[in-house]
Amino acid sequence: MKINIASVLRNDGASKAFSGELPLESFDYIGSTLSFEKPLKIEGQVKNIGGAIEISALITGEYKTDCSRCGKEVCEKLTAELFESLDSEFSEIDEECITVSGNVIDISGSIEASVFGSIPMQFLCRDDCKGLCPVCGIDLNENECNCEVEVYDPRFAIFRNLSKEV
Ligand SMILES: [Zn+2]
Ligand SMILES: [Zn+2]
Image 1 (cartoon, rainbow, N blue to C red):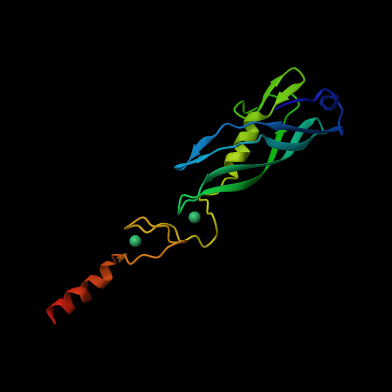
Image 2 (cartoon, rainbow, N blue to C red):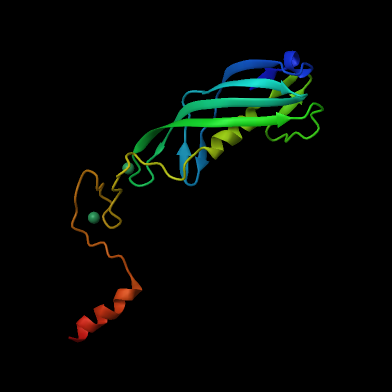
């Protein structure tokens, strides 16, 4: 996403609002695929503070993925904040995040990094999703099964052996 910062660049105190959209391709994240059907929405501001350029933005969007417990499709909302600060000479830019060409900066990399940073470790179709039975694979939200799910705990092994002897 490109922003022309010519009006802000040489004027201390100047600011400029910007907004736009950035399409994002689907990607894999800890075993899940996240697909973005609509582009992300970005609204932000560029400010010149004492010669340094500060960029702040709010990123919103939504994506589809699978519930981490039962595999059902879930639609998740995404909200991420972006903040970057550039010195007036553009001498210390992380080019993975921002590239500069004349008076135009491209913050696509920074937007993607902010999006990555805001994604949770797991996705749930509902907070109390019971997931699938590890034995028969039935969806425990919709059905019950009679599988014995043994959680092996070595502390109880001794009691099991005792009861066998009795
Ligand atoms: Zn689920
Ligand atoms: Zn089962």
